[in-house]
Image (tube, rainbow, N blue to C red):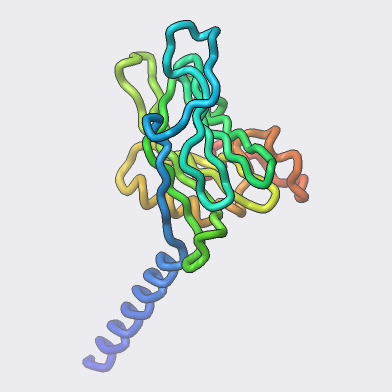
Length: 198
């Protein structure tokens, strides 16, 4: 009986160490996209008195430039890397009035901060009542050829943890916007209508 208990304890410790090891494979860094800390470089006169319309240069991450774009009471992010721009087009993932959180979380393999594989951004989307919004976490993958949204995590228990879990496998997932998948080598990759979590 004692021997069986020792075996169970050993197996439990092995499983726990495996889970902890998997969690330790990735790390995070954060950059700010709070507009008061960014520099506006474009404004849209068509928006009249709307001070929130335009585009801002925000804090870069390594060699990736980060711009916030706003207009029609909606916000999104465009990344630029080595002269190529990657509009994430959050407003096409959710069409309602929206606003971004103040931070971006960058996910990368442990010890490789200069090789981010995903980013997580908070995205607040208004419903029928403009005074109430739903706060999603949008996950985008970063590969040599693509940067695009691959999924979202709606408000729920452990939302941050679930978003990181998605981010850590994001490079294997297709873009949620079909037009951003045209450069995939595997033409048989199907659009994930559920945004990456089934």
